Amino acid sequence: VECPILYGKNIAVKIEEELKKQVEVQKRKLGRTPQLTTIVAAEDSASKVYLASQAKVAARLGIEFDFQKLPGDISQDNLEKEIQSLNRNQAVDGVLIQMPLPAHLDPKRAINFLSPDKDVEGLHPQNLGRLFFLEPKIIPPTVAGVMAMLEEIKIDLRGKEVVIVGHSEIVGKPLSLLLLNKLATTTVCHIGTSGAGHLEMHLKKAEILIVAVGKPRFIKGSSLKKGVVVIDVGINKENGKLVGDVDFETAKEKASFITPVPGGIGALTPVMLMRNLLRLTQ
Ligand code: NDP
Image (cartoon, rainbow, N blue to C red; front, top):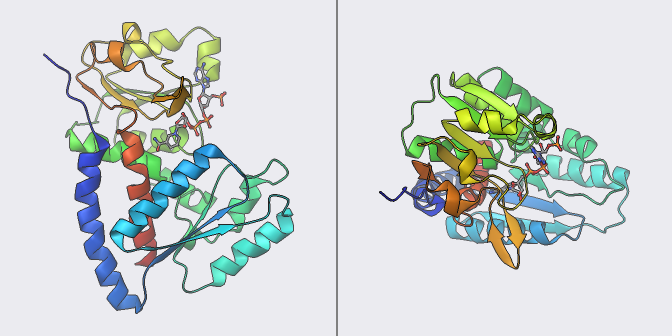
């Protein structure tokens, strides 16, 4: 039997239909078009791809998308002034600070300057803190994409052995809290786990495996338990092709569901970003 492939696109289309309606409602309420502003200070090829997809989805939904390029040598003070002026701008509903910032800038300080009410990526400490207390309003978009994917297959998370590989602040860490809140038994693996030689042990017991590491085809099918649900967040370039953190061909032999790269979680992230924007307008 072929393992079903979980395409993000199918879910994205359904969510976009709902969001289009919400845009119309908000337009009437606000008397203007909901607006997302993204500020970019660094030249980075991955962020160009993310920007292009933000612009595309915004256009499809009828959301105003404004892109502000800041000089690469902008000072921390001036960056914070820009952020504060967007915080005060009533025509702007959400602000995204595109990472990475140039190396001389402090990303954490920048995010702290952002109003939590305009924090479309859910990375302000106040929004991240809500995850801890079971009341998130705004969830980091990639994490929201993973949750939507799990909802799509109607899997009961309670008591499931969930293994997350990668503990980044935008994916692994917030995801682990959300899954814990659903009473999954959540294991988070990272560089320490691999260093101690324990990664294989955790992979073997995973009933749901979520990988966000940033290493091409890092996880092979031979490490997986039969029937595992595999969610691959990774997006890597290998010989000019996009591949995930999971070796798709061998993993699909073991999995009961698997997400492809590209076309899996990556197709959901910009849509979830716009869902957040609409939540901020409400
Ligand atoms: P980070 O580089 O911030 O995090 C990678 C994580 O993997 C870290 O926690 C790191 O641990 C861990 N790690 C690195 N090497 C190993 C190893 N050998 N064994 C176990 N853990 C390891 O990446 P992001 O979370 O930002 O992104 C991860 C991937 O997801 C990338 O490919 C990125 O392009 C992709 N991505 C995709 C999105 C989408 O929409 N689909 C959105 C965001 C990201 P430590 O810090 O301890 O070294």
